[in-house]
Image (cartoon, rainbow, N blue to C red):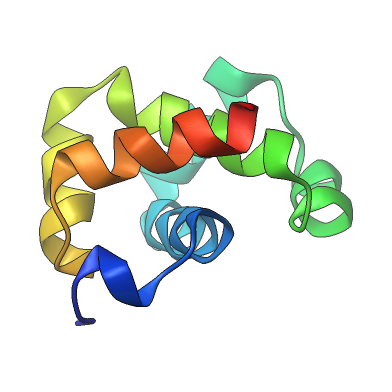
Length: 89
């Protein structure tokens, strides 16, 4: 889908991961249930680093999703983890 992580900053990578998560209804429901976020939170806070970190943390907590998202975004799973760390700083 996209190039390497060097083409994305942490925020952009988190937004792409969020879009990937929301592309599947069951995954989106699980994201909301496990993070405590609401659809209103997603709309209002999409630009906040904490929301991006929460989305990436959600992916890290379920390795199959982490790997699938990384493959779709053409990045390494470790790149998603590094982006979460950067957004939490």
